[in-house]
Image 1 (cartoon, rainbow, N blue to C red):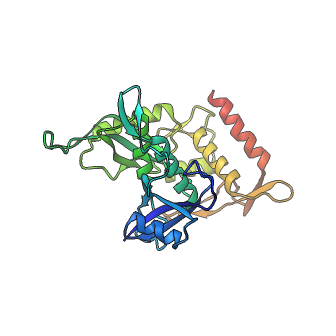
Image 2: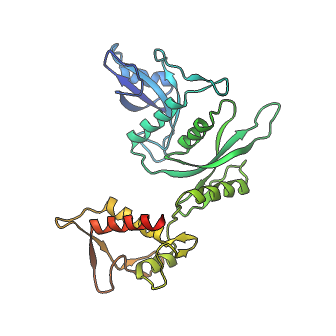
Length: 299
């Protein structure tokens, strides 16, 4: 048994298969079986399977960790899964449709967090070229899932014979892991370094960095202090943005942050508070001003 994403529509006019539709993730033996489960024998219900879902090992409802889009099953009127690319002069996959399937799946399953993947061109595996490798271009791709990262790469380079392959994933500390057997460490690190130069990469603070941030220091200089290779302003900005997203202000526009937080190693530190306070309150507007000031300082 597998899981399929099925879109359906009861309306007479339906020109765009991924717009104005109902969506379900259905467990079935084949894509057409999943469609028939949605239709339930009712002729006026039109339904199409648009991708196979890869469920998480602990998921009981099929809302898993990614989707592999495929051509609609059954055929959707006037739809083309392969389109002619005038620049290359060959037929390539309909990547606009493929990326929209990923977006539909992410919205349905509330996959909002972007992760980082190092992706390159997977070549080989043919009779005349049996050895496999991950070749250039190799770069860092932001995506909600492993499968979306590959298709973002494929769409960018209009892949049609060989396709993208994930060489490694990048964790919250901006360190590579889950290396593919064909990946070369040097290629992965080069891609990460190139990405770092054009993006603000802020790993999770180490315990030493965390202490210095929370306790404060006269040595911290705006837009100049760097700890473990990370500009401290960037870390502060990340913390401030996180506050605005997760904390609800009271009637006076104040948000409170707990202090005396115990770390994993047993040490107790204060977050945005003094030793004598249990909670410190700041105005949301002040946090937003701090973010704006950091943006200006970075220019």
